Length: 256
Image (cartoon, rainbow, N blue to C red):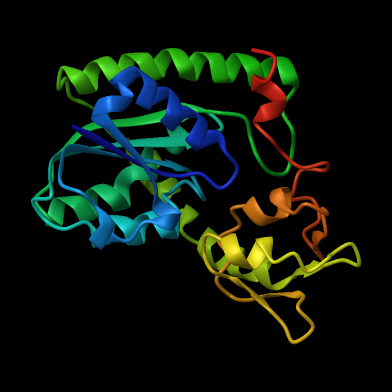
């Protein structure tokens, strides 16, 4: 009945996707990773739910490409759930590009929501705030699930200022590419290959010495920086962007 397609470099969106799957009943729900799924693998289903972390006040490039690849008339309806660090107006325009793509394929959007989760770059939120943010989104997931089951629409009106922020935020794609070029592997690197085997944007390749070589396709998702077993991936200039000590949602949910 439902297909949940998620993009979750740092785990926040995956956590909420699994909570939504539980609320919708696992037997009637398929959970798939956008980073690992081709459009040819999409099964026909009643409802597709696209969930993703907000990058630069927009959907990540990987999610845009996935949405473009969705065959027409493959689903009866589609919903969009974006995940950012807050629910304020500044993130409301994160679905604009996706809705435009879907409209051209004659898809209607049933639910267009933004959920809040802890920030995953630049600064670490206080633990108490992180836990309360997660708990609030868990409650909202239950409401969204009820609306999905009962086909109750909820598409927010996007203000002009939100549209402007979304438009300006698209410049982040270029900044992210430059960020990728300044990444390097420190002496801690043991050439395990995990980074180039699972980079969502396929931006990392092994060089002749079996060390990671970073290209011009980075989306600044932080996945490979935080998941490196040796914590060996560093930024040469923008050292303030990755959270010192990394980020893991497990730090906030393991004791819940």
